Image (cartoon, rainbow, N blue to C red; front, side, top):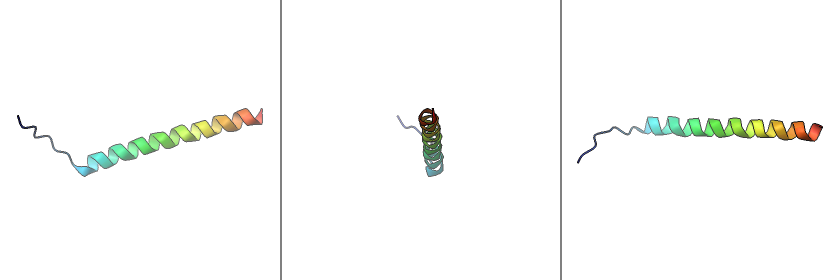
Length: 40
């Protein structure tokens, strides 16, 4: 059984970048909410 699926590093890199961007977005919204809460 041989899987001939190509695994280019570019695909991995883009996946990693996507994850990092999602995390950044999450932290930014978290920070925003925290600021909002403290402003009250």
